[in-house]
Image 1 (cartoon, rainbow, N blue to C red):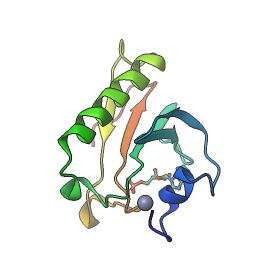
Image 2 (cartoon, protein in one colour; image 1 turned 45 degrees about the vertical axis):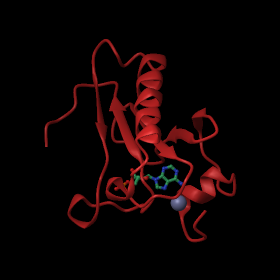
Image 3 (cartoon, rainbow, N blue to C red; image 1 turned 180 degrees about the vertical axis):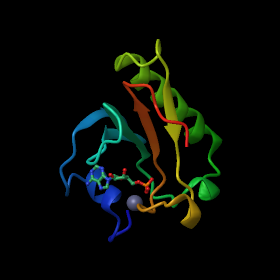
Length: 111
Ligand code: AMP
Ligand code: ZN
């Protein structure tokens, strides 16, 4: 838990979110500013800044499993979807707590 981290606050239920999945190590909730009809953030509960700090392969594998489970539940597996993690300054990472965006529900622009 990092005191000034908005996602840590969501994990601790100090800030509301629309949760779509939760277990002991991972949470997922709707993005507050959706860029697609389905825009979900998948977030490890441990505070890790980004991919470069992630050294726990078991957690990485679990995050991927959760992403796939949510994609199936949301009906994204047939037409496809995008998974993005912004890593640092040039990627425009705003929230410095590792998260994976799941984007889908429409034909996405390539950019
Ligand atoms: P980024 O750090 O650029 O990968 O993106 C951070 C994402 O978090 C953005 O898509 C925001 O819309 C989203 N976001 C910020 N605050 C909240 C919040 N309180 N609840 C849900 N999503 C949020
Ligand atoms: Zn955090």
